[in-house]
Length: 512
Ligand code: HXC
Image 1: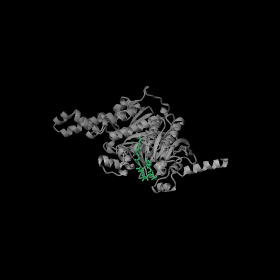
Image 2 (image 1 turned 180 degrees about the horizontal axis):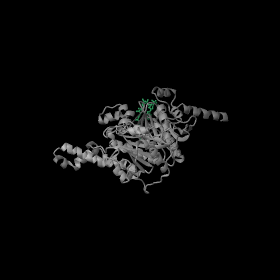
Image 3 (image 1 turned 45 degrees about the vertical axis):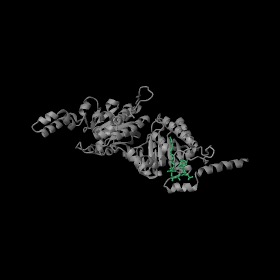
Image 4 (image 1 turned 90 degrees about the horizontal axis):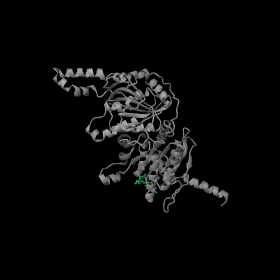
């Protein structure tokens, strides 16, 4: 073949690959308010940084679909100048379904990501296992799941759900660190509505079963809900800005845009005078962190704990805060699990933890106990105990019982524990203590109600303050709320070179 013809063959093969499943299917994708795989990659990566691999990969199996690229676009690019590995399933090619070739393309970029230490970002938009390929497509999924597991804690892995995600296909995203779902165009479920109808006779739509709201508000599977493909891409770029490229690195440091004073007198007025009144802990967080910016994670789920990323003097930090504005900030099954996974993520990736504590305890109730409050609460305890990144705790108000211990108390290796003058640190609240310790004394008193009040006041005076704990060194310093940023910054500076490790072991056995 003449040289020119060889060149033309190469060009025409690439041109065919760029068309995916063809214009009609691309139009259908657009009509469904979805971008194509290539459009998503182009909008996501730094301009011109995409280097594709395996654009010409094709299914080798007899009788199988033979479209260049085989339903997934893979390669490497940059986000804010830092390298990432990327795969984007192409729904226009056999519904983005996963063949062995498709799977191996994903595995190839994951393997390279492990060698060079860069995050893996997946855009999921697929009808699941390619039915015609039988066990080969299952083998392909298995190879991906194994790599997701090996990369866990080594590379940040982020899954964007931008279309259907059914069957075993949900398990790769589930193993990754963060799942972002696009409202109205994405869904995730293990078995779909038809199977559910046949097995349990329940009627449910795809959206109700596995849409963004279902997983953002109810199951807690999704970490972020966004309105469109473009919003998902911009949001993920920002998420990456808080993360290091791998477990051996640090998140990039970014100068703040706003001048944040070291002391903020407005914070002195956030905790209400009446200890039973709620307040939104986000207002406290925003008064302390750089640019008053809090990038919240799992905002729609278990609102009694608030988690997310911020920066302190340009450094990325993970924030875990009880939320008195929701269920009084109590710890329950959902909030414990939510908090635990976030603590472990930050610990994997060298992101210091800042805890704002205002927790009346664990939620009492038969439903909670029978649902496994013990093992789920223990997850949060375990996660805080094993975390070796810098851990800073600010007790703003209530720190009662086991919840006091769990929320990064001094006893479980927190580095600096601060308390506000409004802190109440005790085994239980005054009312409960009066009932347990003084029931007889109260009932025998000539005026039981007055006696009860007297005992409660005495108890509060004696125990519901930070000074007993400060006297014992369990709290390092009682501080004014206005000083919080200054105190945390100084602690973070000191802890920059912190070295702490776990005893050698294969791995711990977190109560799952
Ligand atoms: C082969 C598939 C496919 C699949 C879709 N297509 N899914 N081809 N294997 N799994 C093809 C369709 O035949 C169609 O081809 C094209 O992709 C677009 O699909 P449509 O059905 O026209 O699109 P839409 O109406 O938007 O519906 C999308 C869908 C539906 C909801 C995803 O296609 C669907 O239900 N697919 C099957 C889902 C499924 O059961 N997957 C297996 C799950 S089990 P043409 O040529 O007509 O355009 C699984 C096991 C994994 O994944 C286990 C791992 C451990």
